[in-house]
Amino acid sequence: MSRSGTSRATEPEKKLSPSAAKLRLLKRLKCTTRFERAAFESGAHLVAGVDEVGRGALFGCVVAGACILDPADRIRGLRDSKLLDAETRERLAERIRRRAIAWAIAEVDVGRIDQLNIYHASLLAMKLAVERLEPQPDYLLVDAAVVDCPCAQRKIIHGDALSASIAAASIIAKVHRDAIVRQWDALYPQYGLASNKGYSTPQHKQALREHGPTPMHRQSFAPFYLKETQGAFEFLEEEDVLMEELQDLQEQELQEEDE
Image (spheres, rainbow, N blue to C red):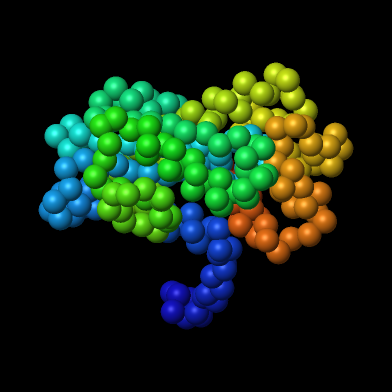
């Protein structure tokens, strides 16, 4: 009851979209080395985190990273690359490349994505990244997938938000892919690639409808961005909203820092 003797009407809680709920969950998850420690306790000696970036993009390659962190040299600040601003990602990527026991990057290009489909292209990129590690790992921690590799592995849902090794792989992969896409912006300025990194923003989709796709756009995604069908591309719609809400969240956090 209020002092005036009348009760205040409680406002109904705003229902979160699935992507907003996912974003809230990701921000609450704690990125630690507990999965790495469990692997060491099981007898592993070299534990690699593995992740891909660019799965939901309309333009360009999909990139995977693999990283074996040094358990004696903790790199602070590791978390899901989507939750980090570009400057922080760049700084962490440099530390990871300098201080990790091993790291590797692999790309699968647009033609191969259209040939295989994005799911299998992502798995191929992760496999190639692991194969390029030197020394080779004897245990893998993989973000929500199983990689075609002979060593033991553990699939972790939201792994890039929970495992330091997977987060490190995610960060170096995203920094690498973002740099690739930015280079294409000068050739195709109408698509806003420098800012959207090839992802499906409203402006990017509008440019595709006005100008059509470039040779670097994924032709197998055309039914989505031309709105001919939905169904199989629901994961792209979810990623659209998630990326927009992440951008809004980062802008809000920057404003709060300035105040």
